[in-house]
Image (tube, rainbow, N blue to C red; front, side, top):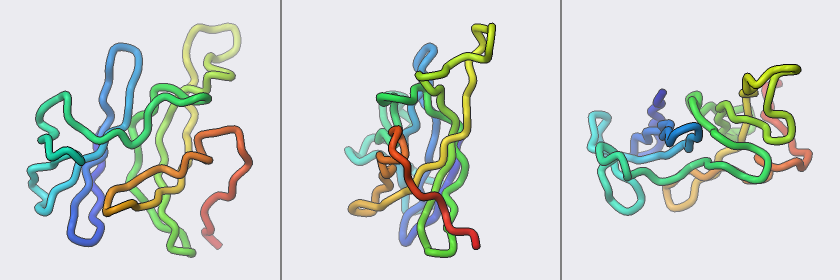
Length: 132
């Protein structure tokens, strides 16, 4: 699935790129809602090899994908959710079926490109959004 997020003068397209049994979340941006959407290198996302990596396999999680829209909490902090497989506990009990828990990650912006706050993809204890 894909999500489009409007921020300042850009539309950002987040999508899941599947490669066999693995996946990665990639992003591209455009100045027009209808595109073309390009990655940081200027490659059109219609080229299946294009896309700036937003979240990929890490130490704890693999196969991130199917993200939500970016949302803002009461502190004006931006967040995104997606599913991923937790390598520490990948399957349902007595099964080979993978669990794909929902992951919540804070989003920062660097030169008008979104970046996940990597602490949210580790075993560190971190604060969540402020909805109160």
